[in-house]
Length: 347
Image (cartoon, rainbow, N blue to C red; front, side):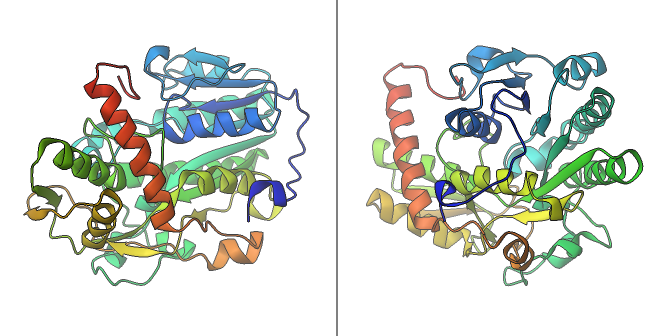
């Protein structure tokens, strides 16, 4: 079901001020474009990165480069806002998450300052981007493990660093509603991917990394691809268009106030099969080399979408092959542009 077919009661005037943090990144940038294209005229986009390094700069959007882990910057950012969408965090793919746990944990400073500032400023609604990394890792030790439902975050045993930061920040959002009346909404993202995202440099996630490796192999004549782990790890991956629509639906649903909810597909695939899919898209067959010492995360993780379907009568539904074909085509063009000396996303 596409966005124009759905009625969403946003309770927003077209000139109400919307703040999107982490807007220089993948999901935040996509959401800024989404609301801009819907006709919202006052969007404030904030990211720590210099403006020249933002993934997307949307015309007509107020873009600010500032560090929201500093309290005074958070206070300034939320001034006069009606809605706040918090995507600001130090994060990346599993290679980054496992190697830089302190940086991931320090993102709690952003949410702590921002939710307090939003409450003091009288912001009406606050969205926090959580993660499936908040789920109990004991339930994810088998590639064929059952899909994770929202209650599976407790008893708590989140992924070290990044997962714990997300879980604690969820609690902040829930308590600001319970004790102080700030309407908060929380989505647990399951591996968001698509065009205009990170595709090289160490922070990229598996879909983009595999696309890049296949494209590089074709370009260089290399017949081998390196895979982190043994290839049996399983995941579900959610396309960016489904993600931004899901954020909109979750933020503006009265039944989902201060209630964590999965935002992901239930289409489970192994890393080996994902590589095969990308090889088919790229029309190439490569020998596989498995790096068993590389970061690989949990053995299996999938999204149980029972709750989101029951509340919203909707779930992310872009088939993985469709989304991966679009992602591959975009990364291939980025790769060619970079090779030609042109500026690309992340440069």
